Image 1: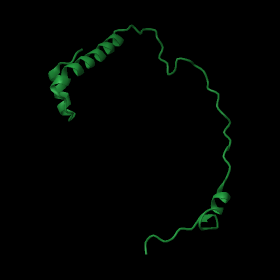
Image 2 (image 1 turned 180 degrees about the vertical axis):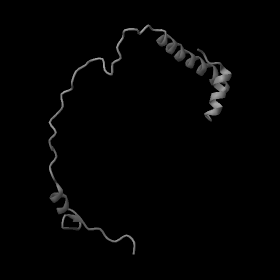
Image 3 (image 1 turned 135 degrees about the vertical axis):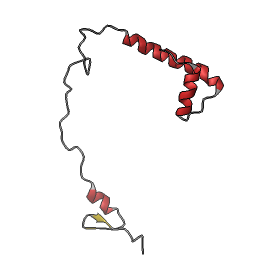
Image 4 (image 1 turned 90 degrees about the vertical axis):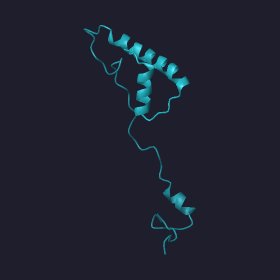
Length: 95
């Protein structure tokens, strides 16, 4: 499978991309190289190869699900301009 410069120009127009004339040839060449790699992958004989989600079938060790942060609310509210009953008091914005 390969793409021509005119096909690339048409796709660029449909995608609303501005493709300059001097860019068309290098981009077409790069896309054709990628498509050539895809063709090579599709030509592989994969009969008998089982699909896998991950190359190593190992279980990851998980860390203990424990709270590691401390509550600093009292310290933060002590330095706040105004706080009441655990809430910050702010001046009204809309009159």
